[in-house]
Length: 111
Image 1 (cartoon, one colour):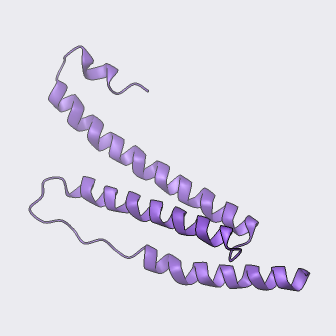
Image 2 (tube, helix red, strand yellow):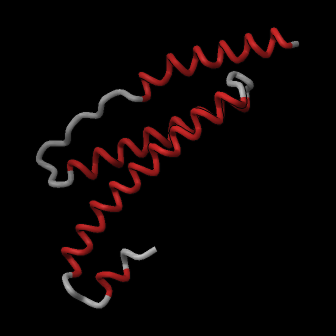
C-alpha cells in the first residue's frame, strides 16, 4: 500500500514537472494595443486559473499526492494574488486618471 502511494506521488510529480513548463509558455507581446501590460497580465491570470483547474483534476484522479497538491496550490494562489494586485494597480491608475478629483475617485479603490 505504501509503495503504491509512493509510486503515485512520484508519477504525479513527474506529470506536474512536465506540464509546468508548458503552462508557463511565454505570451506574445500585443502590438498596436495601448493596453499591452493589461493584456499580458490577463493572459497570465488565465494561465494560472488553467493550472489550478488542472491541479484539481490531478488531485481528484489521484495522480498527485495531497502534500504536493497543497504546495503547488499555495504557490499558484500567491502568483494569482500578485497578478490581481498588478491588474488592480493598472485599473486603479486608469480609474484615478479618468475620475480626476471627483467624489467617487477614492471610494472606488477602497475595498
